[in-house]
Image (cartoon, rainbow, N blue to C red; front, side, top):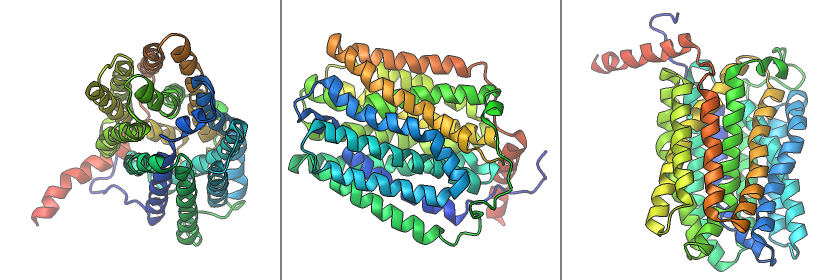
Length: 414
C-alpha cells in the first residue's frame, strides 16, 4: 500500500534532456521518411527493392541489438547513446551523395548499427532515470517528443523533396549532430548516472523476463508495431499515395504528418492513464483501433477517406505505445536490463525487416489492399496474445498517483 500523502515523483532534468533530443531526432527522421522510398525508386528499382532500403536499416539494427545491450552495460548509457547518434548522422549525410542503389542500401545498413545503439541506450536512460510511479507519463513524453518531430518533419521534408530528393538527408544529418551536442552538454556531469563499471545494480537475465507473460505480450505487440509503423508505413504509404491515389511525393509527407498527429493526440493521455488504470487495457484498445485503421488503408479510393483512415491508425498507435514501453520497464524494475531491452527492440526490428519485404511482394503481385490487410491482421494477433497476459503495473505505484490527484484540488483551494 502506498503511504498516505505521498505524491508522485517528479521527472529529473535528465529525462527532459533526452526527451528534447528525441524531438530533434524525430524531426530529422520525419524529413527522410517520405523521401526515402522515392529516392530509392529514382535508381530505377522495383517497389520491393525500394522497400529493401527500409529493411536494410532495420536488419542491421536487429543484428547489432544484442551487442548494443552489452555495450550499455560495459561503457555506460551516455557513451553508447552519443556514439550511436554520431554514426547515424555521418551515414545519413553520406546518403545525399550516393550515385548507385547499392551505396544507399549499404549506408542505411551501417546507419542501423548506430540507430540501435542510441535507441537501446536511450530507453535504458529513460528507465534508469524515471521513478516507477511515473513510467507511463515519461513514456508518453518520450513518444510525444518523437511524434511531434514526425508531425513537423514530413511537412518540411515534403517541401525539401520539391527542391531535391537528396536535401532531406543533409538536413537530418545536421539535426542529429545538434542532438549529440545537446546531450553531451547537459548530461556530462549528471549525478544520477553511475560511471560505467561502477554500477552495482543487479542484471535481469533474459530467461527470467521470458517467463513473464507481460513481457512476451510486449514482444508480440512490438513486432506488430515494427511491421506496421516502422516498416510498412514508411515503405508503402508514400508509394500508395503516388501510385494509387495519384498524388505527388510532397503529399506523402502530409499524410505521414497526419498519422503522427493522431499519435500525438493520444500519447500523453495514454501515458498518464496507464499509470492509473494499468497498461493492458490501453494496449488492447490501441491494438484494435490501429488494426482497423491499417486495414482501412487498402480499401480507400479517395484522398479524404485515406486521411481519415490514417488518423484512426495514428490514434490507435498513440494509445498503445506508452503503456507498452512502460510495461517493459515494469518487468525490468530496478534491475539493469540491457539484454531485455535489446530483445524488445529486436522484436520491432524483425517486424520492420519482414513488413516492407512481405508487404512489398504482396503489393507487387496482388495489391496494396492485401498488403495492408495482412499488416492489420498481425496487429489483431498481437491483441489476442495480450488478452491472457498479466497486468504489469505495480498497484502501489498507481495508488501514489491517485492519492496525489485527489489532493491537488484541495491544495489549489487553500
